[in-house]
Length: 380
Image (cartoon, rainbow, N blue to C red):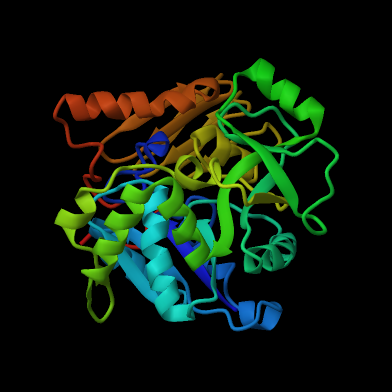
């Protein structure tokens, strides 16, 4: 058994506009520290072989073709060259992306390759707890189970999907490995409170562990069109020195679907390992505020920021002084070509603004007028 980490670096992070743009999405930005989010994800994998994970390989990265040079450059900075960088010519969601990675993992790790699937844009505060959860999941993955990592939920969040653990009293599949009864869409606040009170619901982290061949088998069973298209796309991919180019005409014909809908909600072998490791998917400015150190008034300020009588705010200045007076629970994000001002309670709707920018034929959703200070480089 060889563990093949897979880093999913797709998506445009529209809810973190105006810092996150299509050509410079959030996973390639240094939002929480000196390293970008994909670098932080890669750093969690360093030293795996010495941490009891056996013969772990370098990661397989799946990314948008437009981001290829930034991804390669940022991973080189970490001293962690990937085993492969698979270039998606078009985005087709996570089920096809993981299928491409599964075919690569079989070539890299052999028929018994176990994939650890990690989105590139998450925050994890407790690395030992993360590694413990992986160790608990590995035997189940080797036995043919498809493991989801469920985040221990302590607050009624409406921005996350949930996983319901089997509450029938059935014995765990293994210690700390539980059958899954249901995947649940993002709830309203009342339902989220019920979920937390029950103790049977966990946030769906989007992180998984399963055999590469086993995933492809389940995909072929429940979404045969996606499985067949991805098999053809992988077979016709052109392997260069640094990148593997997936044929655009073949892959563009693939149906878009998430791994949750295509496989995890349908398979009979889905199980869950709880994870309590300071996880956050940084899916909005409010979420970023929650994971950053705040001052005594609960404010997070980055860049040239001057605050007076402000409480619970997130303020980011990229290219000039930003001064705020008498504000509470607000978000202000300034870049060279755009400024966002919103209550923290409304930041989930930033993507609506991005949609309007696109519809108006503007360019501020695509790229920065000048490089954002939070990036390690600029698109090429």
